[in-house]
Amino acid sequence: MPGAKSVTVIGGGLAGISAACALADAGCRVQLLERRPYLGGRASSYEHPGTGEVIDNCQHVLIGCCTALIDLYRRLDATDSIRWYDRFTFLAPGTKPTVIAPGSLPAPFHSSLSFLRAPAFSIADKLAIASGLSMFLRGLPPDTPEDFAHWLRRHGQTRRAIDRFWKPVLVSALNEDLDRISVHYAAKVFRESFLLSPQAGRMGIPAVPLSQLYGRAIDYLRARNSEVCLRTSITGIAPTGSGWLVSSSDRSFTSDAVILALSFEAMAALLPAMPHNAASEELAAHLAQFEHSPITGIHLWFDREITTLDHAVLLDTTIQWMFNKSRLQPAHRGSEASYLELVVSASKSLVSVSRQQIVDLAMRELTWFFPAVASASLLKSAVVKEVRATYSIRPELDRIRPSPASPWPGIFLAGDWTATGWPATMEGAARSGYDAAEALSRSLGDPRHFTIPELPPTGLMRLFSAS
Image: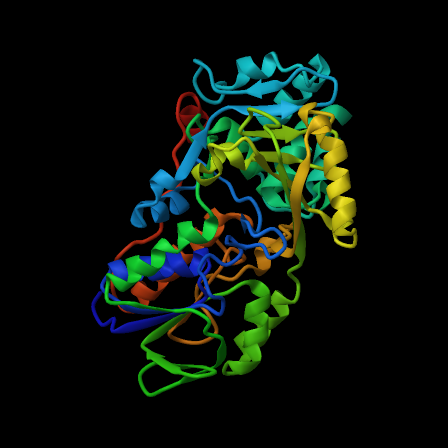
């Protein structure tokens, strides 16, 4: 990259990893700084002190249209660590399983045959859902003040269609309640997951602990003349004659450019240590308008196999997803014991609930779907509450999401909360890192492109998208 001597990337989450790897590939000398002892940020794993087991802080999944994240896995030679699924099982108490899977019809009708057979929905439900999805065939609605709960009522969705289709899909994808979700981003989830193409709607699940997956970036960067500094907390950033001086508690880093790949709350906390100007005041005001939404992960270890399903959506319950880690991760296979992770997204109601009460709730609800739970012994359990799991993608939030340009020359912003065109997802984080790397390269007069194109539509969706 002409004129690029060094870049300091602050933040070792997916945004920082993506930016650092892209710039290192382009010939920059990168210094990636992370305050934790591992990379991955909110997508990480650790040894749980109460169980002695390595667990993910929360189950993370991607879908086939996450092109920037998939490109990052390609860079890290980690594509073999993702298991892909195109069949989704919905379980409702007292009803046969509903399996949604692509068939022989072209997009957007590729899953319609399995949907028509779905026992979880009545004919009225199916007609309402089909009518609602048809609204997204030609594109995404604008980001208006309307929330998605209001949109569903306005478009005549049945109660069961909302509770068993729109809500479980959307709350899991965007980690927020329907009355706090932008219609624009709700439409993006459904258009890309159910309409765009069979490939776009596939679900990918990491087959290794998250810190192991993203830890590959350390060797990747070091092999490209770059440095990774863990346990490094930033205390200040100041301009120098030709660039920036980044200070930590025990070391200083100089570079020609800086990428701040931080969460919105960490960015807000850093602002007082940054040079002050009118643009930084505006950024501070915008950051103050972001809000968090929590996720709760419930980890259960049983003495026997509970289910042969790899994963399932659980309907009409507090628990929304079941992930069978004994089948998903090779490290847990080959044992008679069973390890399940259960996920409750937008779990505001559980934040103040005790660990034991949450485990009791999970055990009670699991018996509605898996009879083996009643005769199994629970060997150990863990509950992880990620109170700051994601930001809320509220209506019209895009008007305050910043571009990669920052209030300071030579400094660029990355993070899933920036203006990526995506909500609070791993894809949004990876895309933001590439966007920041591209903005930095343009500032140096380099026409290099890092941003990854989104997945194109297939089948008849090509006609709808072109019209």
